[in-house]
Length: 335
Ligand code: PEP
Ligand code: MN
Image (cartoon, protein in one colour):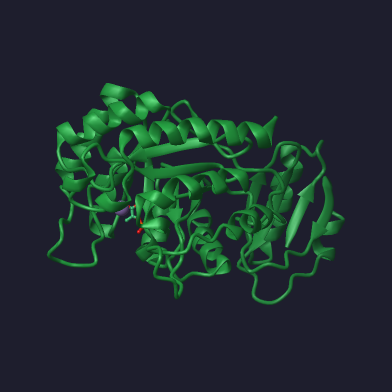
């Protein structure tokens, strides 16, 4: 249930509605909007009687929310969520470009790639310090040393950094270094991690589980918002299907569905969807055409020697070409 306040409702009226909701044993969650405040009623078991709230001063309307996800839904908040990270704006009509290697391998590697992607037009640098690998024998990431390198990249280039958190034990550390905390596909339903992310003071990039429906994905985001962190960026990265011509299948239709269902920004990671670099540019352009809010792309200056995901990493020249094409496609749809 959503209590929509008049645009001229006073703070006292809002506080009174919250008080009445809480007195009935529910949780009240004010959602500030561009024009008016709405107050979500959560933690109700069974239906809530709207008549309790309709007559209160300052209340414009009381709307039942039909979807299982509440805080992330457009029903709760009609206008797009806009997230600011450094100088970048994520959400709305902008296009944010995140790029960098799969994993941070060394200071030289990270700074070299950062220089290339920044010059090409990237806004935010990506790179994993803690890597979720299928094999325990594969490179697991540099850990804290990788985070220190990310800090150096930020200091030297001015680009904010996005990096993955894998578990509760390293959460505080990752939160300290990251500008955006990434939760990977394998952890999308790690509910304790989601709750911890909800208490973080940084935006969260939540990747879609490789076998998750959109509803499960939005419910995962709901955990983060429910804990108080409203800055969640969704990231479509492909799902498992029967095909073997690509690592995953990019669910391009998910973008418009998510944009209809949720106010949260949604970006696309074409690299993990493709698995091979030839497919990365076409998938990126398709993502821009369907109005994704941004792209996260893996780039490596010497991909043959990369310690992870070299085959799907673009060469810097390819990334530069991609940025030019992205700008052109974005212009077609936003002029
Ligand atoms: C990554 O972005 O480095 C990554 C591991 O992605 P995903 O969780 O989508 O596999
Ligand atoms: Mn990768």
